[in-house]
Structures are given as structure tokens and as C-alpha cells.
Image (cartoon, rainbow, N blue to C red; front, side, top):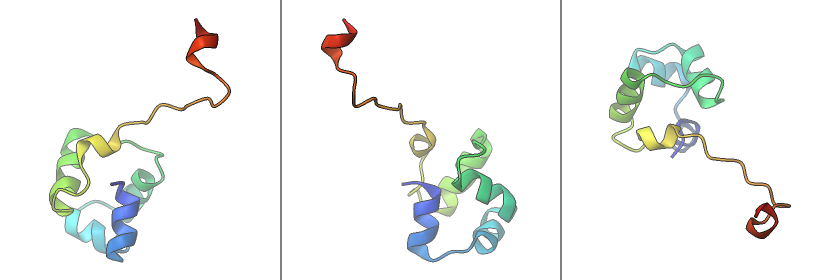
Length: 75
């Protein structure tokens, strides 16, 4: 689950979540928008603050897929 999805589902503002995690609202905003990636300490803090719902794997960048490319044409 993304941090943004978690905040929306829980009805949490950036300020409230920031107080829980001791991160600034600006930092949380940048994380939610994908502008910044968290370091391992921040990943852990967010994981704990979300009761394990936002995991380290949720920060992995998903590879883009090109609908016009098939495996056969790549060979």
C-alpha cells in the first residue's frame, strides 16, 4: 500500500501523520508524490507508524510497461 493511499484511507492529514512520525508535512508530501524516496530509517518509521501496512516493498519503483512492445518483437 502506498503512503498516500494509507493516509487517504485513514483520513490522516500530513500534519497529523508528521506528528506521529516526527517527519515534516513537507517531507511526507514529497514522499507521497514520489519526489523523494525515503532512507531506511524513514522506511522503518513509516512502517511502524502504519502498523506494517506501508512496507519497504511499497517504495519499490514499478517498471514501466510499453503496451506496444511484445517479447516476440524484442527477440
